[in-house]
Image 1 (cartoon, rainbow, N blue to C red):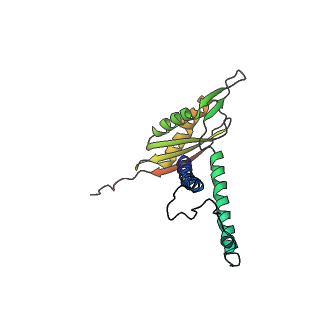
Image 2 (image 1 turned 90 degrees about the vertical axis):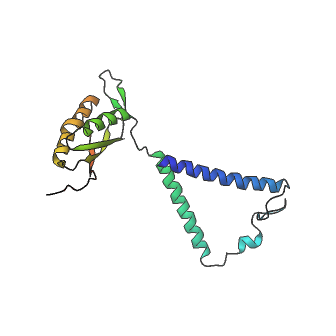
Image 3 (image 1 turned 45 degrees about the vertical axis):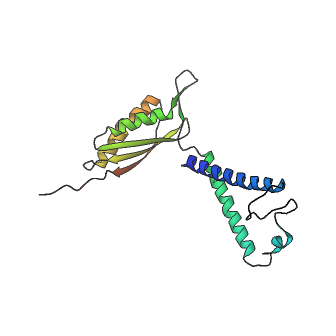
Length: 192
């Protein structure tokens, strides 16, 4: 999602800057500009003295300006923090015994764990995401449960089989997991 937000924001900012910059450049060069453009001569200023002092004595002006600027700062901070946060773990550091270690792609471990979890009895599908640090990964698992499934058995199978195999194959001491269960949508069975 953050990639889409980045592209939209960059596209809008670029378009606005291109239009405004082109119009200001055209005005500065003395070229003809549209009739709605507020500046039509080389000597025009962006804000005249009367425009700068117009709302100064109004009681609502400064709180509104401060509120709008505060919202813009909060949105900019949210965007910056979203850029720094990595949604998925790219690689897991495995102790190979030689002192250097080996790197396992995070998506490979997610795929293996997801396919094994999806093959459990009563599970229709599984989605796995790895988070955390390279040396201490954490799994987020979403299981799509079939109508006849018993959640306790599915969780036991996930813990005893899929997570244990992933932990053993990656050489991890522990692999904490957050599991969310969701039921598959199905039609009601007819009772006779």
